[in-house]
Amino acid sequence: MDIEKLWAKAQEKTEIIRGRAKGLSTFHSTSVPYIFLGASVVNEGNTVVRKGKILVEKPFLFLPENMPQFEGFDFEEDLKIEQGALQVFFMMRGIRFPSMKYNNTMMTLDLDEVSLAKSAQKHKKQLEKRENVNTALILGPEDCWQLSILIYMASLVGRCAKNDIINIMDKFQGDS
Image (cartoon, one colour):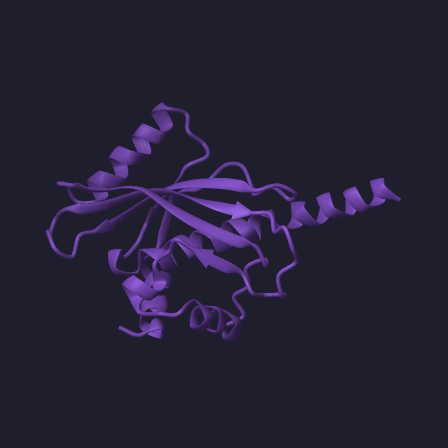
């Protein structure tokens, strides 16, 4: 499947069940834990559970505008898409990530022997019981899970943009 079809599929089927309550830090690195659930394409009726985190790193040097770096997403290995092609794909569609490094670390990969809906309900209840407001719960197609996670990250970046601008302005006014 080509990137156009994978992207359309991810856009159509990604569902953010529960987002992170806190935004991204304006001036420091931020760890964004997630649980991704996708219907198994191998074991019908079961759910693939990916738990991981994305470290959104504050750049140590300025990267070119609109050229984010994605690490740990296995785009080349799993989807046969080079990072440069992915960046151009996003740029051509007006999808912009701040020029930072997004480093994905997969912590666990499991199989729930229940339907996607039952698995989603189970994980949502566990997060609520633990009062975990930092971990996102994302549903999407298993064969393009990376794109579903990037859709979530883009929504988080968009949600934080206004506060980032205010924080940057306050910092510059304080430095004057």
